Image (tube, rainbow, N blue to C red; front, side, top):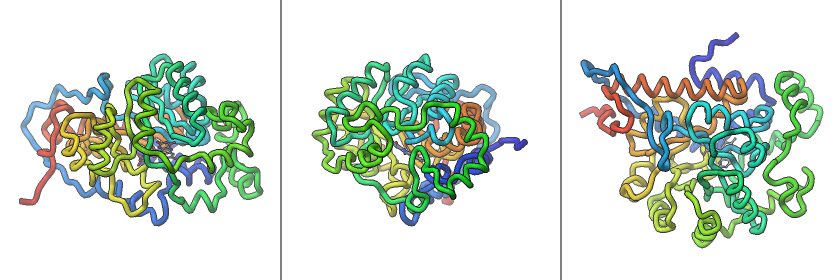
Length: 380
Ligand SMILES: Cc1cc2nc3c(=O)[nH]c(=O)nc-3n(C[C@H](O)[C@H](O)[C@H](O)COP(=O)(O)O)c2cc1C
């Protein structure tokens, strides 16, 4: 039995336990994967200043995001098909987040539906929206998110077209997987995953099938998603979504200070500085690279969150010290989920919380809300 001490341990278990096509779907960037790698490298380049002889006996990593107090400023990012990494993945992720005390964002492209997750959690979660051409479906989806009690809408703006991830094309990735000979052979080596999948009825896109016009089964779903992503999406559509939703709105996928200013003008409550985990525009900088200029552009008038490349509590600390009001984890969450289901997600959160707390202490701080870029070591 592996003793799990870091996110990398969870990643290895995830790789062992989940069919290749879904593991590869999670651990991939677009084209050369330069941006995917850059997200992590940007964190690794920052060195921290060690301070001593400071009373660090009483410490707190609790922080507010979107007006609510959380156990730490780290939420779970929306990830499509999480219910293929582990049976009922989104329900387990939402439950782990709720018990731990951090926000959970459910993807439009989740396997478990909004209603299913709401029925199995006590506190509200956040819902991530992709705008599709079928606006009647989107309007109904926004209503469903309201009815499910979601407390914030995260509108993703960076997926009007899809960056090619070579592995998905080569693996012929579908949900549920096609039962081809190579897939069957690979799945035979993942008995724990297969058993879970056989025991759950949730194996397709729960928010879409049976709700979008003409999507009653899986064959039509793949055609539907390919033709439904809306390349015409504009700031007018953001205003339309905001008026239909009427609640707290977060815009995700902001990588440029001009766009951050437009987000501010749109009346959104927060932005997520994100390059989609390096899955969309390859050749873009890391989200950490652009964070300081975006923080400067919005000048404290809205909250700024960051995702991309966070694999440890140290990374969270570096993002916060660079000006983020909060952070999100995508792959670190999926690694926990794929490795050990709900217990794995809880373990990922515990690992990050402990690393964050101890690293903050080594830097001579006791309150996460007071950390700034003075904790960065500089040569001169
Ligand atoms: C497998 C996978 C699926 C994703 N699906 C979505 C999605 O449905 N909606 C969305 O807004 N972002 C999606 N993302 C992007 C994440 O929300 C987040 O921006 C990214 O994972 C952060 O980078 P990290 O994985 O390095 O933490 C996905 C990311 C991954 C890895």
